[in-house]
Amino acid sequence: MDIISICSKLRAGAFILAQQTPEQKNTALESVRRSLFCRRDEILKANIRDVEKAAENGMPATLIDRLLLDSGRLDSILKSLDVVIAETDPVGEETAGWITPNGLQIRQVRVPLGVAAIIYESRPNVTVDAFCLAYKSGNAILLRGSSSAIETNKALVAAIKDGLAQAANCGVPSAIELSESIDHSDVDQILSATGLIDVVLPRGSAALIRQVTEKAKIPVIQTGSGVCHLYIDSSADLQMAVSIAENAKIQRPGACNAIETILVHNQLADRFLPLLEHTFAGRVQMRADDTCYPILKAAAENDDAAWVCTEGGKYGRNCVVRAGDNDFGYEFLDYICAVKAVTSVEEAISFINSHNTKHSESIVTNNRSHARMFQSRVDAACVYVNASTRFTDGGQFGFGAELGISTQKLHARGPMGIKALTTTKFLIDGEGQIR
Image (cartoon, rainbow, N blue to C red; front, side):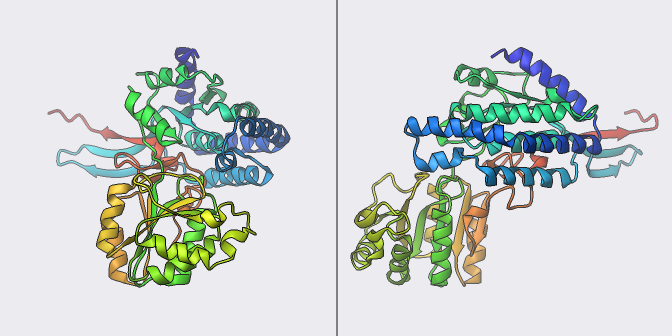
């Protein structure tokens, strides 16, 4: 990859884009939407090639699900694009303003970062999401997806560039580039592109994020892996707790906002755990600590549903096993969940803060003081009360799309929308003042 040539084009595109009006950017994005819609068959066929190759290479089903782009998911991408188009353009927004005693007028306004790069795995939706958020916020973007999604990403970027080209004087095709190489050396080039790229965002596995943060010589907005917890408090509504646990673990276990560990107050364990086992019904392997194991094991032995597996479950009689030392604090990204008993909300908070990745955590409780304590003391980007962690998502938060979930504390935290790719500068007007 010729990183200097690519970044030169992107920098030129970013300069043009930064001067455009919201109307011009929206016109270009609407043209991109039409292009994606018109070329949907081509895009879906490309994705089929990627999925088939992934299956041949033995990719787990939960990760293939992240790669899959069907007609419904493509429609969701187009709807997300509609939301981004409808959002207020952040560029030029005045975040603060004042007049100094000597009469200087100071305004703090939002401006684009410039050239961004995103390094990501699978998830073709990221290709469109990252582009449209970058474009709307006035940034050029370099996309580096994984080899598993290369055909899909090529088709998507071709459609995006075609849409920009058809937008007459409004489109800026040079504002987006895709690294089509599957050589890992291009990742090193991106991470070393000092002065060429303003920021890089990793989105994917813990290994990818660690590689980027450790090797990057350019600024990083760190998205994190999702070791998310669900704590069932002593006052929890049992049916609500089971429903939230089922959604947060099973709906899409390969997502970073799916739970990996369930904590239950020991006073509630005898009543909650049999309901949990019956609900999971062999679909989820529960790796339980010494307190929870006998309760779950007895429930499984007396519950035919646990091994009938009528809902596609695969674990049957093996749905309950003893937890190992490394099961707590681990991101399974599969139909596997660690289960542990605690004696108080304080112990739950302490355990979560020492085992999580600062992503998303949830408590199920009817105790208001416990709820507020949990939200105040748990260190995570998103902290829920009586709701599934699966809502940690830019679309669900009303952003239309997201660049990822930031688990760091500087610049951006949580689902990152348009403003995550902006910074501010100060504009000062005077009348001849000197110091």
